[in-house]
Image 1 (cartoon, helix red, strand yellow):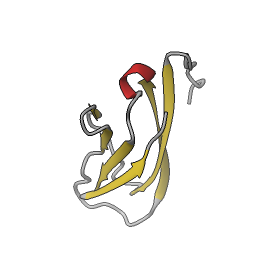
Image 2 (image 1 turned 90 degrees about the vertical axis):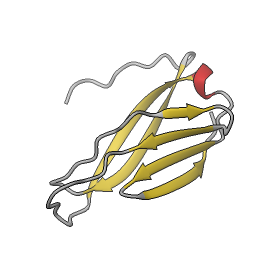
Image 3 (image 1 turned 45 degrees about the horizontal axis):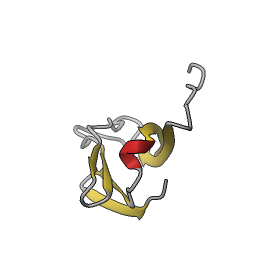
Image 4 (image 1 turned 120 degrees about the vertical axis):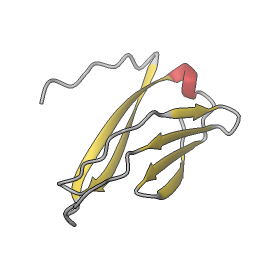
Length: 91
C-alpha cells in the first residue's frame, strides 16, 4: 500500500463505501454514473463469476468526486451482486 492521496476538499469530496466480498472473487468498480435529474449517483460493482468462496472479506472503496458534479445529489445507489441499495447522500 502506498501513501493516502491528498484531496483538495475545496474542489472535491471523498466518499467511502464499505462492503463485504468473497476473498476469491473480489468486486471491481464499474463506471460511476451521476444522474442530475434524479439527483442520484449510481456506483455499480462487477458481478462475481466462477467458484467463489463463501467468506465475507471486508473491503473499502474510496471515491474522490468533484463537488460541482455532486452538489445537488440526494441519493447514493450501490449495485452489487444483483442487489440495489439506496441511501441518502449529502455533500
